[in-house]
Length: 461
Image (cartoon, rainbow, N blue to C red):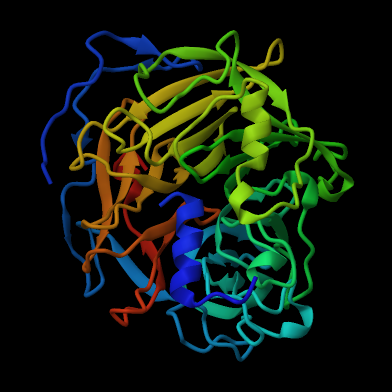
């Protein structure tokens, strides 16, 4: 196939990837319980999390009273390695460094058409010299939030959207893509790449083939087993787990390159279960897992659902656009961005079990755009609230929290509308919330990263 124009390429890739009223909205009429035994209360959905309403905190952000922020990593600004900061800031995670500083590893969801010279950083170590995306790594002083140094740490990939941290000290960066040589690239795309926290300069990185080739979004690693859970961002999406041959364990780093088995979640005795509609909050569904015989299908973009199709052929469950994914306190929480009767988003909990394959529980479904619209990246706060970045396109978007008793509250909002929020993550000490706002080339708005701090202890976060 000949090289595509940017408009054609973005249109096709978007097709593959799937693309206020403030008040009280009632939930279930009775008390229910989640799989963890936590009471799920039929309570009002919109609260303030204990922080109060948002106020203007500066030219870029609104925050609750008493909170402050600083801007780092502005698109186009020079990094210490001499490269300009790439745009399309997306998923990221903060790690502790031995010197007490913070390592922030950040995805860049760049999706330029394939061509030589488009890579960020040196093309000599790029996975694919014709692909524009990758990661940057930052070293940040925790008290001043000052960037000590920043550099490109992964390049030659395509549309790195989200990912997740590993307990052995690395970031798994996911390509939300399914392209290859037929689209003008030198290599196949649709993989997961590992960036070590200890990496101090750009280095060639091979994909982790065994984790599968599909339209990836996010990952979460269970530190008790080393199992890797993965989400797929499409209207026909699966929730996957990878059972590594060399799992993480006490005193032992996980080695995902040693191979393993990829499986897709299904609901026991309910083949091809569709989770997108008519779900009941708090109900626990028994889970089974379907083996994926060919996790690395080297097929054309028209067959992007090859892994999903294998899973559903075996009875696997369908979700609608799975995005953020995060491990916390024995469970994996993940987002179905378009899930729910009103297609405004669902939050699911998968809780593994020693005696069986675990349970799947819907812990939240949005019923109102003013409460929550299409959550994307998520993380869990030190106090157990789920922090969600909205990707709602046509309206103002928020960083919002979901309390353990089912209330949604506002954490932050950008001054400008129509800017995607992404990458929420807390510093290792829990004092700073980092998140991104994506740029807009047409409107000449630069992407950037925010560091927010304040009296978190007075509320749910």
